[in-house]
Image (cartoon, rainbow over all chains, first blue to last red; front, side):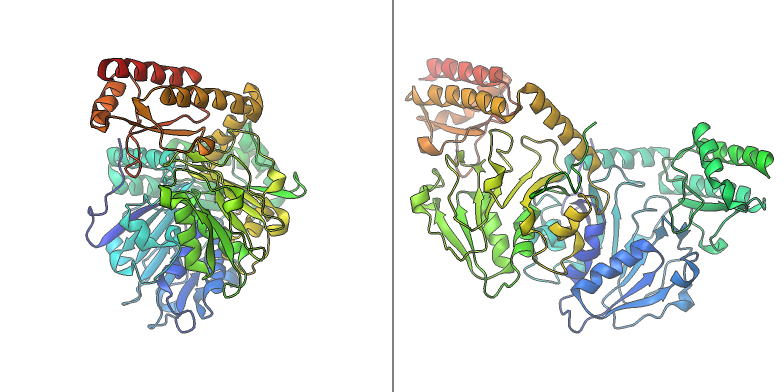
Amino acid sequence: MPTLPTKSSWTRIAVLFLQGGASLQFSMIPMNLITDPASQTADYIMTGSWAEKAYAEAKKLFADVRMAASSKGVNYSRIPAQEELTLNPGATYVHMTSNNTIFGTEYPYRPETGSVPLVCDASSNILSRPVDVSKYGIIYAGAQKNLGPSGVTVVIIRKDLLGRKANLPSMLDFQALAKEGSMLNTPPTYAIYILGLVLEWVKEQGGVTEMERRNVSKANKLYAAIDESSFYLCPTEPRSRSRMNVPFTLAKPELTDAFLAGAKSAGLVTLKGHRSVGGMRASIYNAMPEEGVEALIAFMKTFERSNG
Amino acid sequence: MPTLPTKSSWTRIAVLFLQGGASLQFSMIPMNLITDPASQTADYIMTGSWAEKAYAEAKKLFADVRMAASSKGVNYSRIPAQEELTLNPGATYVHMTSNNTIFGTEYPYRPETGSVPLVCDASSNILSRPVDVSKYGIIYAGAQKNLGPSGVTVVIIRKDLLGRKANLPSMLDFQALAKEGSMLNTPPTYAIYILGLVLEWVKEQGGVTEMERRNVSKANKLYAAIDESSFYLCPTEPRSRSRMNVPFTLAKPELTDAFLAGAKSAGLVTLKGHRSVGGMRASIYNAMPEEGVEALIAFMKTFERSNG
């Protein structure tokens, strides 16, 4: 039976299991960290639509929200490198989105932010690879990719970032929530219970190290299948490619509907790409077995032979 | 398969299925309705600890939060009557808690508030009786009593109360949430699905009219068993008694532990009263069958014969 971590089980870091999705964190993070909206700033690294949403919500709460870098000009097909980041050493925090579901990109590195706390929306790749939690100020993640059902969000927060702002609404106050072990009110019990079972399953499988090994293997196979053919194209820069979401298009885009229909007949579903990228997108989160990726690759080869 | 009401399915009222519990509404309601915290006021009717929490969260957001009445002086053992309410005709809203789980009281009437919108926390008695929704500005209810699992809150809101405040965080903005049919982000899908099944079950049973008939029958039997004996005492004023939560104490309070232990042996559990009332509390929500109440009454009679 999984249990919530108690208030005292970690010394430097608090782990919160909060109601609802990650989107509320776009507001809770500035609400909790920005005590003087007139003078404080934060840097947002723009790598996709979730980063855009986080930025827009921050902008409602304080004026000087900065973009440390943006790859919007290349349709978010790459992650800006460290040397491209314009970081303000006086910022209250730096915000990043570790994996971008729509555009299929993922940070190949952890941004170095000096003494400025790094805040990471890890909703779509948490638990897919080892992460040195001590290097982040806040890691937050909606559960519904690799953690469990929707309706709960995990927030891993350095304790020195708690309690900076007084008089916040209790349900939006990291400090108040941490003090009560995430049980300030009735938590989303079913979602937390299933999340606990998922964590136990990951442990049994060999932990995040094993998850990473599997995810690297799955992603390498699929990207290789795309790259070795001129029939399939991948819109993302190789060093920025996501292990979780693999977008690809057809050299003959007029065949996209036929590809999706054929894939569906072969039992391969939800492959349609987001309208801002087009083509296909294979989401291969922790729960997708290697056999699923192999079945997709087999279908891709068959489809190419018939239509190439 | 239950579905979310769409944006257009109601004309004057929006029904929202929001992530998390009712406690967040204690803040969202003033955030959405109080556009000028320096000049606006609201009236809170204080009938228990949930009303106190709602009041405390409102106080963080604007100064002139008033208590229209309070029964705290009699340990919240009764609901103030209409003529005891000091209502301000200029208030932005009046807040009430329709049922009080800890103290076992429930409004026997709907407060008349003139043109001031009545906001009702109905978390612990929604769906237990018919309600004329058109008489309320907002009805909100966490799911986990009569609606379904924890992790989702229903907000029934008059559409003219939407969009009063600009530039709110999207996830806290009733207008933005209503516009997207409660799907501004991934909603708590499992909780909403089960809630839909519960609604279908209630309909099949004969609707809220039938729920009320059953609840009246259950509550009348239990209160009669308490009242007809001098061994058991009920701390609540008869006209304010809750159909959902029935607190009772023993004339010989030293027997309370023995009562609870004996009840547990008889399969009757979670009967311990809240520390602020003491004794026992039987929660007899919609899901409690009449047989459950009859089993409790039978045990009470046996226990009285052995210890009376």
